[in-house]
Length: 280
Image (cartoon, rainbow, N blue to C red; front, side, top):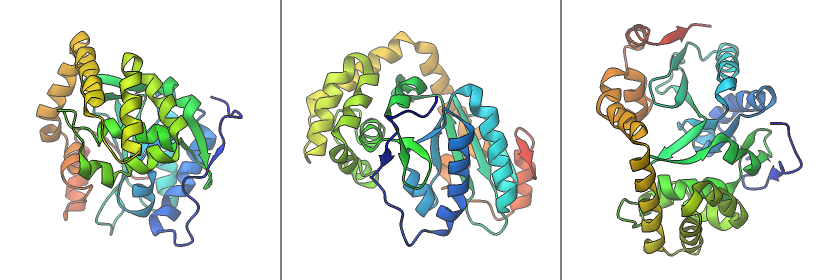
């Protein structure tokens, strides 16, 4: 992707005068990846990584994953946060973690070329590229309303079509949708025949309410997609049953809050049995 006129600077999040240590740590990498990969972008939750201990949720073409891995390793060496562990156990994703000595938590970037929800594909990379903006801090990201629409499904909707109020609040879903209705409209277009009910649900959520029939219609669409592509659903089920038990990285990401065990060196030796571990 070459940068186009549609990549306006995002006004959503101004540069904070009280930037955290992790903001200073992450920003060089986010800017470097924006420059080195034409398809790389952050698609959600960047503030939780910059201001806390969250991960960087990125998307990029699979052909760019080797470049992203190389740049992540270079960044980790320069910032003194090596070693880097490369994990490919989560289906359809690349997870890169840096394990700095003296830190309670590791630094993680997850990269995907598509995102699944309830066994259905809710976006592929080509769906995201027209919705890219350039953050005022110098990196490529998804526009706010599009991020809000996808998080409405991933974090804000229960299987019965009702609202997950905890997820809606924690992920600022309503605020993102209200700030950028056009972005939400664009993102809904990635959902095929579920576009209209998803957009109705997004508009109601942005106004502070909830449209359960609309979100049940989106749930029904996802169920039909999963039935039509059973191999994808079976792979996800197998991963959920065995992934955490067989991969210490996955367990640390999903179940342990990205915490580095007290025996850091022993943990790294364990990871090296079925992961690539780079010390510099």
